[in-house]
Image 1 (cartoon, one colour):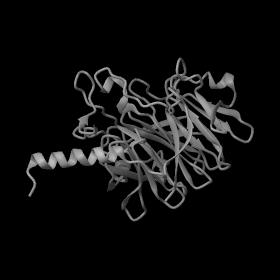
Image 2 (spheres, rainbow, N blue to C red):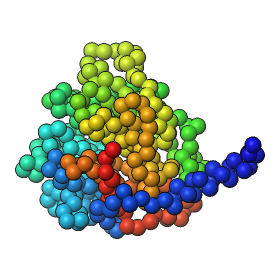
Image 3 (spheres, rainbow, N blue to C red):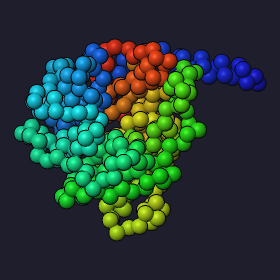
Image 4 (cartoon, one colour):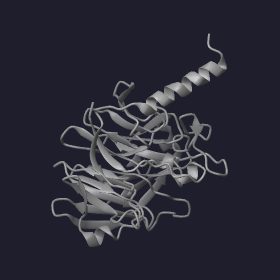
Length: 340
């Protein structure tokens, strides 16, 4: 039987081995130098879109389309420069690109048939005191958008016809981070200079392709949750009744971005062991790919070519988590991996 010290050393050795792995299944698609890519969206025609938060010195454009491996401003240079800090992209079933720019609380609908901005939602009735919108998924069947709000530890339901919102499951156990879950990389906890660990409430979200279920979880939580969208769509249901409809699913560990494929799998980005996993319909968790280049795999987009496209934000390498030392590994890169 191993002593505690030997057990810890074995664990650290295992983590280091993970960090050194390289898989030929993880394929670079585009490189962005020092520009940090976050949002990823892929159309039915396999057009790939990538967003960059906080345009400026490193990020010239807020929204781009990847054409022949290059990031081209989208839908044009003028509009691309107007975005403040695009956090998430999503392509809906009708092939509209949804662009979430949470700093000014805006959600753009871009018709990809004509590359035109059709509508902008401004969340006028949302209490912005604590809100910090993160991800968006659009239910074209019900004409609703579902957004994660880690700032308020809640889910925001936006009516796309009226522009009105409902904030639900605020500080519910499924939307609230578990502060005992501390992100750890190669044996080092992710803490700032004051010793405060990284914590995020409900963050990654996914909508099944049949629009039936909405999956979500905080980063600092080990289990994933889901709720039937028919309950999210019902404005007459009480908060207590809605909370009772939440289903606690499998333990999946620390994850960031989520996405649902057409087979019913829920794709999961996992930074602590440099992997992409997926939760299959039978409730089992599988590893799709594990690679040292998966430094905080973040946002997903599913292509018509059968590949999962993903960004790597490298947040754990930022100076604030490393005693002021920038440990990011350039270039920031967009990858793809074959779907399960």
